[in-house]
Image 1 (spheres, one colour):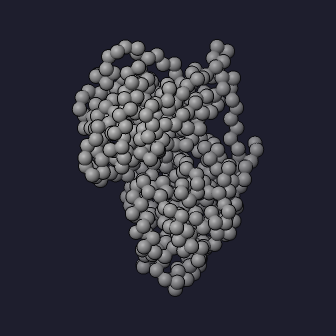
Image 2: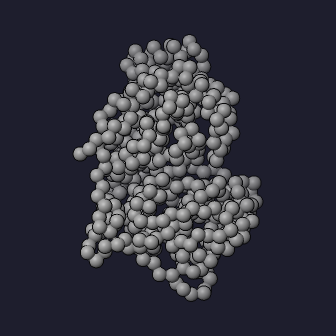
Image 3: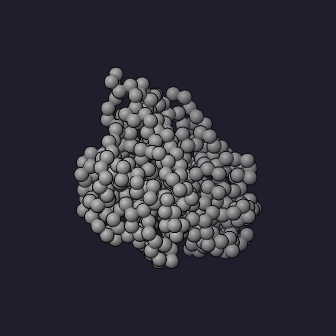
Length: 487
């Protein structure tokens, strides 16, 4: 099997409640200045609140997940996302950080065909398991301000350390000697307290991205002690990964897609079920969170993806399916509400029997009203009979497994759905809708209204191709004149 050289590392925290964001971005900027193209991967297939690393790498973050994906899927998606870059960085907390906080962990042995016990689903994907599957060198982030009691035993198998919040040069020298002597791994870089920079990072909020000045300042601090050449050398140590071997069947869909859909190609299915499928994708400042691999699979499978802006456009592209991703519509609520033409176009799409899939912020946009950041309510599309209110204290996304209830265009009744439940939006019903999931505790997390599916669960379709196949199934519009949201 052909082998690909893929320089790669994992970067993660090993202490409970510690963020690796500042030093990770500082390291990325320092490596970027060495002329390296960096591709970041999250160790869980859910949307992080801060996606600002894109401003430093120039590439949208991608997602891997040992809970959602098989080892083969992870390897295939990793290779597809990393083969055009110089260095792949997989980031997240290592299991020891979650264990010390008492958070439930996945054992990493699950696959879509073998559900985890619910107690182990809550956290989801494991960075440690990805390190095993992808043969990743491990860089542990240590918060020096939490090491006053001295070093404990090494946090599992690691290949290097990044020291964060080091308050002086003498302390950095002492910690470096202790770590390299006791743990026998190198200290590869550090970042001081830099309170002004960290305050600016906090001020970015959930939608902001660091400007060039902030990125350069973070990189400057890292370069004072960072050994970028040694980091790259460690990333290049591992054996080469085998390339994914995917053959395209006669009907033009990737083999793994067809296998996941459950039926091999036949002589009578020489063309895709819906070769001319067009997907209208909402993409602007309000709605912009998608799994890149999902979009890749749509196009690989024969779909035409056309983007549009709910904020700025006055018409909807002609499409079979409208796909509204997550984002932060609460920050643009008034502008979204004022775009009467787009709201009307979406209602007409549904009235004609068109399909819509909407997640998170996209689902909130389809409701009767949406709550803005200041607490005011704004009229939205009105397809889903609910008011979407912001949760003032959202929790960490929760890994959940459930089954489709009555079935929908995504799949038949009993089809398994796996993803990460986000409670940033709370639905207050104003009418009747059909629960999309069979489990009572998830009745308001996926809802249906005619051919509209709204979900608080983020689904990475690249890991669940049996659901992505629903986009391509032949679909007949109702063709009536009834108001489709009166269920």
